Image (cartoon, rainbow, N blue to C red):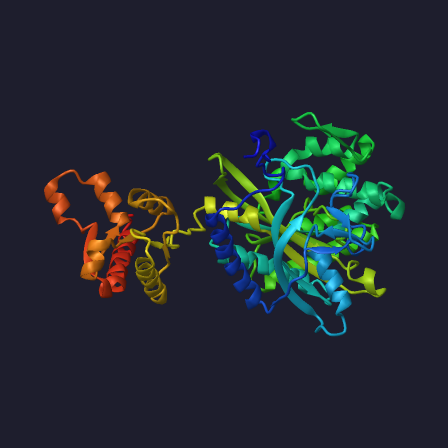
Length: 510
């Protein structure tokens, strides 16, 4: 017998999470709805591996202030560096570049999967999470960007999120690039500082203007005492950036704002700045396109504070934000904020081909959106029925064969079922069925087998009767919690019980 001190401690790595059956089913249900909208828009499914050559991910890494630049990397047996993907966009760019001549242009595709970031974990911040993306590659105009914003609005409503509970916010990185040029951060030599500034602005909803001002300046210490180095801007430049991304009245960021007035004020603010004005023009075109398609400012609106944290965005950027106040996992009412985002990334595919390949896309944060939908009551998985359990009363070969035949007959009728495969007795087996949430248990001992019969226990009704019925007359009048039927009638009787349980649930009786 091994020494207890030699046992390996079971522990989950920081920044990762185990998933329950309920969570997995909720995700699948949500993703089926998202997929249906993507398909409706004409996008096709595709998938790439979780591992790419590190150089294929390029310089566009999510956390460059860490030694391995935000990704999990390793070398293979021929000394090539490989990395777990940090998003789904970079692998998509590699795939399109590698198969460019075979693919239709524009190339419209969607994909879902796990991504990995070697960042400091924290509440709600994981090192492994799932994304669900759609991309259009090969369309240079902003019509593709406008379509992305409209499709995300349609996804929100398909998931049961009503107008007024969400909004798709749109900005343009060219506007932001113009702002950064104006404070002397243009050119390749300032790429690192530009990204630090953009990431600081991206935290506006979380930290507010005061916290962002610290990150634009010398840095900020968080509640845990950890210090994040800032962009090092002087006070005048900090104020210039904040004025550029914040309207004078914070309330103007609500969905009641008028897009046209916003765009007019931007045109005046950036007169003479060609880069920023190009971005404003594109925003004007997007506003006109979505309006013509019937998407008002209550669904899609211009918000100059939208940044997106990755450097590869080159034009319009957008975020899907939940406006509803929703209870979180601790029961506290919070505003969930962003559940997805994306934008134009014209330089990503071009890296592999040496020619311009325009592209735009949107990514949904699956886990975050699922949590919000569950807490809003929009992801009910109660329609998943636990399996019927056939108890094992005798373990001789003949008896086990009879039990297996019962399970096979139930499954053939489309009823989830299992034969108990543990080593416990009847009482423990019934407890197992209860823990599984099983609706029905099947019992056949030697006496029943000799008569060709089975006992069927309605576990849902039995639990209700035990909890609610104290009077003998009520007990006798109630739906029986256990019946004995001929073995040949097993499937029909189980169907009858399951139908009665379903009717009770429909009436709110279960």
